[in-house]
Length: 221
Image (cartoon, one colour):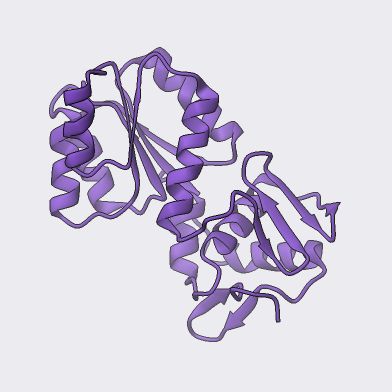
């Protein structure tokens, strides 16, 4: 899962970025409104954490322009502007969540997991397909109750496919959502990663649709 973090306060940005990475997310960090608008309008993200008090272009304007351009990723506003009228303005502009500063990091992560679940049509906090379960809070994958030892990148791949169970995901989409913008992307990396995950799962649960991509069925077959 790839997150755009938009925050101009260096200390807060560093702390949130570290927490997001520790929770298994890939993070792109920007510190001004113009760059944030361009980044969100041209790159693919699973969610955005957006501060409102930004230099260049304020966060509310960035949010409105994204929604006007039909950018549909879920957005969590993170701002020192905490009055009820400002929260209403943010939600009405298209935000999915509003968390005032100061905040607890665990609450931010919980709200982020929730808006990602909603955006992908998931209702359970633990994703389960047949004998396979994935707990985003603990970053834990089990098969028949036994924990599997996945690398961070293997976990991200499986998490993305399970969040989008029931539909085909292309290699390009996986590449866009598993790697940060500045990562040198190998055209063969996804195939190699899929192979590793399949071997560790010991299950024929990740299906290949030749010429289209990969799919985890909505229910085990």
